[in-house]
Structures are given as C-alpha cells and as structure tokens.
Length: 164
Image (cartoon, rainbow, N blue to C red; front, top):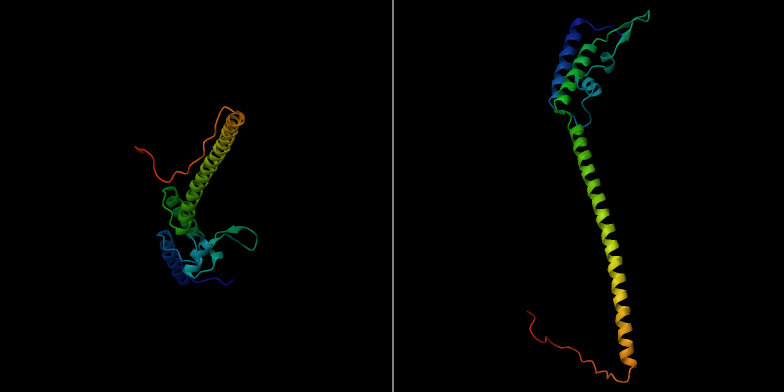
C-alpha cells in the first residue's frame, strides 16, 4: 500500500472525526452499527488504517489512524458506562431482552396457573362423579321398595316462586 501524504492524512482524519461524531451522537446508518467498520466506511478510509502495522523488520508500529480508533473506543465505552447507547439497534436489543424475560416469566406463571386449574378440574369432576354415584345409590332402594310411590315428573315451564 502506498504511503499517503500529510494533506490526505489530515483530510482523512477530519473525515474520521466527523464520522465519529455522527456515530456517537446516534446517527447510525441502517446498514451499519457503532463500530470501526462503519466508522471507516462513513469516513471513506480503509479500515486497516485503524490497526497496528509492522515494519519490514517485524517491529510493530501504530496504524495511521489507530489513535482515532482508540479515541472512538474510549468515547464509546464512556457513553455505554453512562447508560447512553448511541446505537439504536443495541438499545432495541436491550429492550427486546427485557421484554423477552418479562414474557417468559408471564408464560411460567400462566403454565403454573393452568396446571393448578387442571388439577382443580380433575378434583371437581371426580367429586361430581362421586356425588352422582351417591345419588344413584340413594335412589335405588326407594325405587325397589314397595312402600314408596314414584310421582310422575312434570316439566317446569316457567318460574315458580320468587327468585330473590
């Protein structure tokens, strides 16, 4: 890669600082996020300029814009610790995680209530069945005993007596 002159470097640093301000203020493009990749794309500079390089002898040297990448990371970290999340998607992910946890708790509560209601239903049905069997048992001797006369059943067509 060819070396850049001082004028180009200054122009690129200004573009990076403008893009940095844009991202840190929350103006994140729809297809990006608050990261170095989006910063490099918005500033129209190669992303590799943000990372350390090596001399030909293998010794490390800073990338041309590495100091700006470190500044960006520091400022982003400060904003996150302060509770301000400049990336709307990160904020949305946080809100969705909270909503997901709330919904999971509601589902657990609903499942517990449903299990309780099913147990109550089983108990109620078994009691009704036991009462029905008891009524059948109590009616049986009256029907077989000759002393009791069964009266014909009459259909009720209207209300009899007061309902209050």
